[in-house]
Length: 196
Image (cartoon, rainbow, N blue to C red; front, side):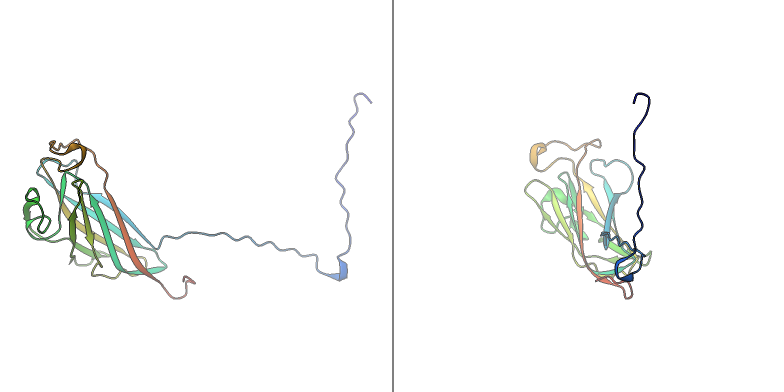
């Protein structure tokens, strides 16, 4: 059978539905979608840090269109070489070491959807490696659905590192560091969304 091909065409057989049922078919496809109820972003004002200088940190917290947020707590790990300015007074960390001494004009503040800024209480705890954990507990604002809270506070750059491998070394405007922040909140779904 040289030069010939052998194959079979697909065959369709129509048979009646048993018991006279419908020939209609249906498909159901379900997917799980994760929606963030609250998200946080962090930025710093202006270019590089400079020794003895001050920068403003901005933490932006957004609620989704499906939930409101309350009991918002922000925690920020400020790296070695910097002191968070969290309390008006002469020391950036109340009762803290003398190298964090400086003048703080105003306390951290938060505003919601561009409204007036409200003062925020904060605590800063110095860690053994020279970093500081700053906690802004229970921000004094509620965050309605589809809203934005903007938290601002200042940090000062020290002249020398305090702990870790660089302890005693001078800081420099070209130095790099890792800064980690987190947020927790109680969220409540708005009515009619099916959220629980």
